[in-house]
Length: 454
Image (cartoon, rainbow, N blue to C red; front, side):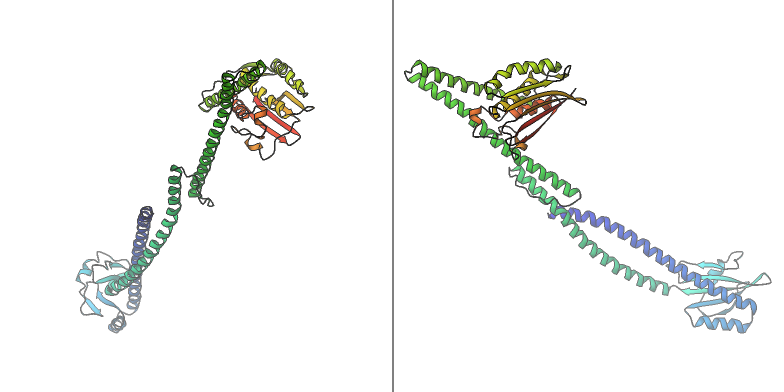
C-alpha cells in the first residue's frame, strides 16, 4: 500500500504544488504592481494638486507652504523653474540632476512618471508642469522613498509564506487521505485476484459506489462468482460422469461374470444378456451425448442447413413416435401450417423435437396429452411442444438446461434420463440461431417453445 500511496501522493503533490506556486506568484506580482501603481497615482495626484496652487500664486510664501506640508509626510517635493533651478525643496539631500535629464522636450500637463523602479532605485518619482498662459514656468517633482514599499513587500512576502506553508500542509494531509482512499480498494482488488489465482473464489468486494473503481470491483466480483459457479459445475459434472459411467459398467461386468462362471438356464441367459445390451446402449448413448457436447464447446459442431418442408418433416416424426405414445395411452396431437419451410439441419432439428417429445412421453401418465404445434409467428417459425404431465417445480426451472441436472433424481434411472438431453437441445437451438423458452407448472404440464427465423 505504501508504494501505491507514495506514487499517488507524489503525483498529486507535484500537480497541486505547481498550481499553487503559479497562483501565488501571479497573485503576488499582481498585488505588488497594483500597490506600486497606486503609490505612483497618489504621488502624481499630489503633484498635480500642488501645481494648481502654484499656478494661482507662484510666490515665495506659497512655495514655503507647500514644502512645509510635504516635510510632515513620507513624501518629498522639489519645485524648480523652467531651467531646472531649484526654487524650493522639502529635502536638502535630494539630487534631482538625473531626474531632470529624464524630463525630455515636453511634459504632459497631467504630468508623468519619472521613476517607477522601486526594487533598484531609492525613490519613485513623478513630475507635473506649472503653466501660466499656456507656457511652462516650472516643475513640481514629487518623490517617495522606496523603503516603505520594500517594508510593505516584506510584510506581504511573510503573509504569502505563511499562507503557502498552511496550504502546503493542508494539501499534504488531503493527498494522504485521498491516496489512501484510492489505494485501499485497489489493494483489496489485488488481494482478491491473488486469491482467485490460488483457486479461492470466496471474494467479497465492496461494490456500492458509482465510480470507475466500483465498476472494476463489480467486474472482479462477477468474475469470481462465475468462476466459483464454474468450479462447482465442473465438480458436479465430473461426479455425474463418474456415476453415469460406473453404473452401466458395473452392470455389464457383474452380469458378464455371472454368464461366464455359472451354468444358467436359457431364460436367465437371455434376461442377463438383455440387461447387458440395455446398459451397453445406455453407455453408448452417454458417450455420444458427451461427444456432441464436447464438439459444441469447441465450436466444432457443424450445422448443415437446407430448406426443410415442415409439414412432411412433422408427419415423419409423428409416424415414429405415435406407437410409443399409444402404448402408454397418451394422446399425441400434431398440427402444422401447410406450406411452412425452414432453413435448418434436418437431423439436428429432428434430434431437438424427438428429445422434447421423449421428455413429454417420460413424464406423462396414462390419459395425459401431448401437443406438437408448428406455426408462423411474424417473421419466425414457432414450434410448440406442450404436455399435461407432472410438470417441473418452479425452483428447478432455471437449471433444467444445465448438464446432468435432473428434476426427479429418484426416477432418473428408471426413465433412462442422463441429464444431458435438454442441455443438448439448447445448444442445438442456439446453433440454428433460434431460442428456446419453457413454462411449467407442477401437476399441470410443461410447454417448450422454439423460435427460428425463416
